[in-house]
Amino acid sequence: MSILVVAEHNNQQLNPTTLSALSAAFQLGETVDFLIAGNDCQSVVAQASKIPNVNKVLIADNEVYAHFLAENMAPLIADIAQGYTHILATATTTAKNIMPRVAALLDVQAMSDICAVVSEDTFKRPIYAGNLIATVQSMDAIKVITVRGTAFDAPVEEGGSASIEALDQTHDMAVSSFIDEQLAQSDRPELTAANIIISGGRGMASGDNFDLLYRIADKLGAAVGASRAAVDADFVPNDMQVGQTGKIVAPDLYIAVGISGAIQHLAGMKDSKVIVAINKDEDAPIFSVADYGLVADLFTALPELESKLS
Amino acid sequence: MKVLVAIKRVVDYNVKVRANADHSDVDLANVKMSMNPFCEIAVEEAVRLKEKGLVSEIITVTIGSAQAQEQLRTSLALGADRSILVETEQSIEPLAVAKCLKAVCDNENPDLILMGKQAIDGDNNQTGQMLASLLGCAQGTFASEVAVEDGKIAVTREIDGGLQTLKLALPAVVTTDLRLNEPRYASLPNIMKSKQKPLATVTAKELGVDVAARTVLLGVEPPAQRQAGIMVNDVAQLVDKLKNEAKVIS
Image 1 (tube, each protein chain N blue to C red):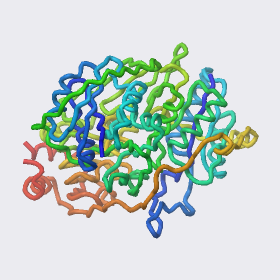
Image 2 (image 1 turned 90 degrees about the horizontal axis):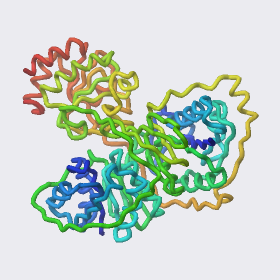
Image 3 (image 1 turned 120 degrees about the vertical axis):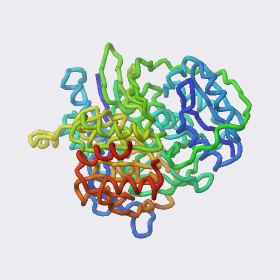
Image 4 (image 1 turned 45 degrees about the vertical axis):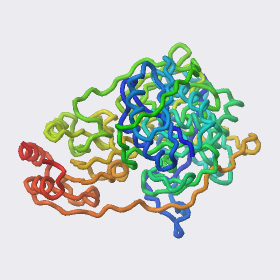
């Protein structure tokens, strides 16, 4: 087994979720190479080479990879794919954009969002919004796989000294260009990296009322999420969405406030260690997955919770 | 500008699916089927571009059984001009779907290909990217905004940290995210009219596409169920439990 893991980063540091793909790779075999493609990304390479058990860090440092455009990244990955049995990346929006394009170049059927490695060619993955788990065997020579970040614990990050090899392939299809990016600016942790998440649903009634959650989040060092209903109602932006069509999270503590618990939402958070539900409807399905349920009006419960946390 | 919209017939999103008796596959006997919700958004976007005068013709295409004609008729009622069914006996994998769509694109030469970012059955999120790869063209996945500007297309994408805007040369493949638009309902007169619109059928074999499976489904199972916990009486008890029992806050 020889495995290539495609790193996700912002040209300065590794995205922590990318480490889950490394863990999955270590389950598959011992020879794991780590590809860093980007622009001016030497600090990422330094960070990556310290991860124990990484065989080799491959670096493609060129402005054509600066924004990780799929049109340029896919041919680079396909170019070096022949020496590998598996190519893995964590299923972020970046990897979901790139990896199927790689698979098509290699004429293989990709495997999306695996949640378990059964053997070198067999994997488990959620289908139908997580209502069922399929066990799927790949017959292709090279397996192109995205990995569900919450399903694999991150490996240790320090103590290794992988060798570094520079790649000089430059692939520029010149059919797409980056215009701009509006990234949410927040002092709170990222949803997919947070230990505690407090999320609001339709019951929050307005975007302004999310302030009640932000105040509690700041006391707990938590991230703030939302259900699809709250996003569809335009209370908050879509990058806060937790669920099958949003982010998949598994924090130590997940507090669902005014969220009924549609299967769509549960699919995104049910692997959290401890789930708390606060809802005024005692029949809300969210209570069936909650470790601690509180039937209460959130507009009285949240201020009380905030004061009790001081 | 000519637009091709790829759609998929899937289990209706309101249906709670189950594994069949021997857990070999999903039980699809007698369940309601509909157009994949993300595909509805793709059809709607094409119709809006046509209403703005930017698009001259909308062709919808699906790969599937003869019954998928229902979903093509729905797309015709929503505003597509004509449809193509690529008929296959069994459901096929995203790579094979992309190859069929590539063959259709080679015949039709669309300027823009729209499709949903994923189908809610397999949740693969692959076909659009694979088609763009096979066509050797640009891709704008997870689109929340699409603007046609001087022979190119600007696509705003939903990414993990927020939004990203790319400019793509045409032809391009754009896959739709939830917030791109709110699809309309077909009116009764348009449903009647759709029955007269052209719907061609072709087989994957006639297109010269190998649709052989590359993966084997070994089984399906329900996910591990979480046990319901306890109900607390008030906020004070909740905080106490979180601190002293679950020990997740200090």
